[in-house]
Image (cartoon, rainbow, N blue to C red; front, side, top):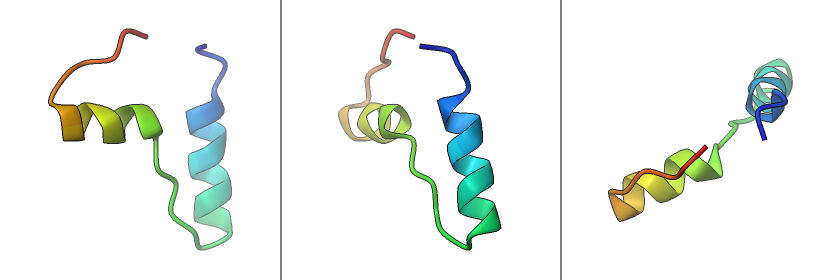
Length: 37
């Protein structure tokens, strides 16, 4: 939706020593297709 969810997720993950996974990026890489944003 373009409200910064990914940015916030990455910052929270970094500050708590976790990984953030963007599911859109994951699906695009597995399916080799682009998701409309």
